[in-house]
Amino acid sequence: MNEWTVVTVIVVLFGFCTAVLKPVLVLSSTIVKLTQAVETLEKSLESTSAKNSAVHARLWDRVARSDELVRGCEIRLQKLEQGRGS
Image (cartoon, rainbow, N blue to C red; front, top):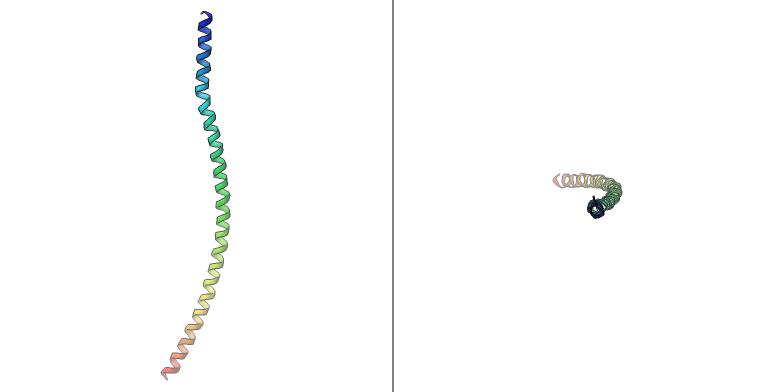
């Protein structure tokens, strides 16, 4: 082998390594960004879930109080209707 063959092989190997490593590095950085985005979404989902649970508890409490009020109104209406019927 002469010197030019060695230089050609080195240049081809360098080109091959560059052609393979550049997409791998881009892919790696993209995976890191996606991992960070997923972690942020997980934190946001946990926060939203906690807030959602608190809101649901308040709503169910309000529904329970409304049921009591409606029940009281029903009893008063029944008494009024019974008084008119007599």
